[in-house]
Length: 264
Image (cartoon, one colour):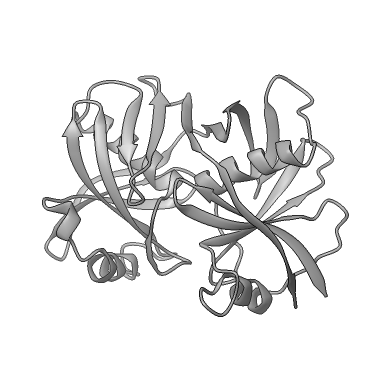
């Protein structure tokens, strides 16, 4: 079986994106994992199937790099919207509307290779609990996120420290993503993220970026919106929100890296 794909990057978060509106591809988790494996496959943090929807402009069927279906992926959603625009899908309303899991999201293309994704309100805030030597916080922004404020972010062993927190089943029965933050200005953060499903540090994480901005505002560590968040790739994502945190957006680059065909 040959599959045409597009490799995309959302601020360094990279994805294999496939047009599956005709329903031709039903990939199992071994195939997805093989495609996402670096050096022996295409290599990506996740795989996205853009599929037909009866109620929205399209459906985003997202899989983590381990091959299994994932929860909401913010940068993946932004890449899916830009891909939809490239293949000629046009929104029925003023914004794109798409399904992801059981939820509905809206977004718009805001410029050349730039997408603003409107996020759902956060849930399950947990403030200040200890995990080993770290003081952690937690919030769900479509995916679960532990938040840790750290000094010397550049030198931090994100893989080891993040993995240890991610696997604390007593605190996070379904696992969690782990974000290490440094406040760099009243409206700016730097972030490094260990992602579950990838089981490694990624160059960016959209829902983690949103979680970082909202938690920092909640704790009074930043005082205005939008928040500029510098991710591991060196690129910047913008997170905007109101005081009630029920109107939230994530905006940043969504770029095509290359197109190709893979034989499974």
